[in-house]
Length: 201
Length: 287
Image 1 (tube, rainbow over the protein chains, first blue to last red):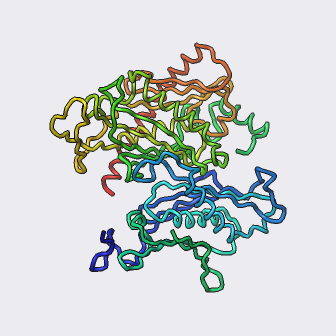
Image 2 (cartoon, helix red, strand yellow):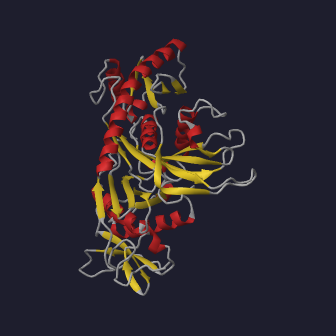
Image 3 (cartoon, rainbow over the protein chains, first blue to last red):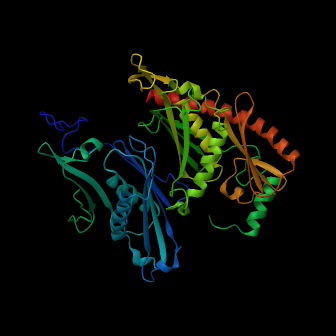
């Protein structure tokens, strides 16, 4: 199947290094300490941050830093075919772990010992790049909550189809079977870039 | 939610008794309601409803299926509610399951009628394609994004708005098939039939605090309730479903009084919702 036309246009009319339209909103969930909605094309996710607050499970409390927890769930209606199990499956658990590790690296956890920061990400619409949208939404939500961070993390995916590197894959391109990578970048680290995650599917 | 002190509890109860609630509303006033339709383009119909800080999304997906043997002339509808942890940290993991199950069964009760399929607020016979063989299965999914009380009313309103936004694709049935075979069907991408929602009821919850009832309680006010009655009423003013929650008993005369109050309040809610849905649909058509 042709993903890049001979003129160099992708299925949705973008150029290979062009991103989808981005939209963000902050403060949607009034009750949360911080929240944000992030859209990358048709992928839409909402992130809410509760914390720093008292640790719920005392056995997990750490005396020198904050405990960061994350849960990723997809709404039943987020994918084309209706999903039965919004969370608890392997993929959700893996992505929860990945988001947690990425955000934990940026939060100044040593400033908030014996406390807990919860990051909840809910996918409302999935059209490829949900991992990246979640990390971007989580960053905005953490900033809305006023949690001290050493850096800002942004994320995007990329792949390789029809011998062309493509930026910001949508669902059709993502499921085409070519290699793809999701990269999280810390922007302010002394002007150089480092990656905090890069699984090659 | 952070616990309330004695003083705060008395303030809430006293305000309700004097018809002046903490946010300035009267007992039978709803918070400002905002409706957006078509928020989930992949679904057949969807809507987002905000009542104060309560924010819910409902989506309707239609799939072809077989009617059940007991009701071959009716389609099927299933309602599921999911409470997202973004609304409440306690909904993490399996924490929200109990509330989700309670809301799902309350909505099914109010909108879908009894086991025989009779008395449903949604006309199931409009969903049948080939009697006994092919029908539409509607999956209605509710998602609670932010919770500040009165989830049932908000979800009921969102489902009504989503159904009015739902387009069921036209189906062309191929030539006559043998009686035991599944007929071939061709789902049209072009033509859509708008779902008829004139019979869909709205749900009004009356929360009893002390001697008085209030409508559209916030989370704080709900913490002071002794009992709550949720009534779903349709345009004709007929009761489609009723649920009582809370362990405190109610005298039957109180329930009858609550029903008449709900009748009065739901009329206003229904008019408000209809105008908001019409406005939302108009916005969606323009954009």
